[in-house]
Length: 405
Image (cartoon, rainbow, N blue to C red; front, side, top):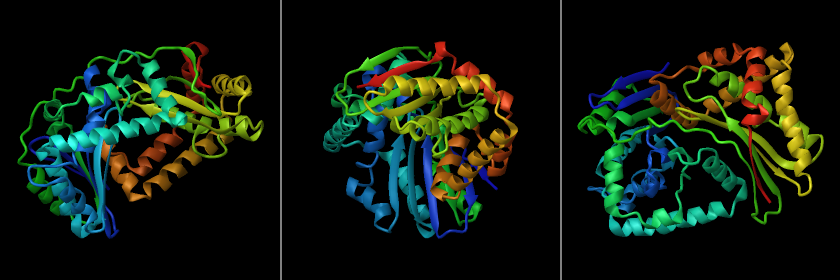
């Protein structure tokens, strides 16, 4: 189903042939905000913005017009551990996308005047997050949970560090970290794989292999805390969280099932039924599981009606304790498994999601599991595994609390 190739300089390619007129392509780079020093906080995100601001061959307008001008879409994002540039286009324009990815990743010049303008854009973005407590609380929670480690960095950075970025610092950070061995080209398109490989050889193979300066040898340590911050919000915003399995932990699939059952996107999640449907204490209650390469984080978020903070917290803790004490029945387990498999299948049916998913998977594991393989893994999870994971991860002395009021 999936096909792979590796260029001599270390750039990897993962591909699935589709029967759509639209091609989805992207480049994943194994560099994110955790690869920054304190003085460079926000640099990876700033570079993601600045990649589109000029190369040795194009000005900013020509970069943006290269894909948009033929009806496609060009975009990018940064996480704690990855940067991704991606595009949607007609299949006939796939080569145009790949060539542009190569140009911005290897020939970006980071012009002074463009960087100064982009700083203002990022500063506005930081302000917009500070005006959104339901998003800001996640960033602040991670900063507290992993205090003192680069993975605690806010992806956007802060105003002080962003203002101090210079073109030379941006170029040094970029050239020393965004190297070929950390790159994966991901494509879902109706094209012969041999032709795709030839395109990638043409646009990427002449780039030299360079050792990356990124160092992730220091493992983050999760800290427990219980803090309330005054934000003068209309709701009480709350996160209850804990450390969770990392990307390479064999328990990751079981925890994914547990998290989805607890507070996934479906309206019948345990937390939604207990806190919202039965008691009406909140509009939003959800659980998010984020695995990193050497740690993981589970965050339960709730936007709670004023005056019901204690009652809502007690209901959430009761659900966590119940999952750690009592095994799911066979019927409950099968329902949870079928629900997650269905959600994965629906998500995979959107080719842009698949392109991003297989790119990240190949980046981390050097392979991609098929949907059937992932479904089998989900269906192999046992009720005992879920109970034992819940008892371990949700133990009271492992939980941390952050409230905005």
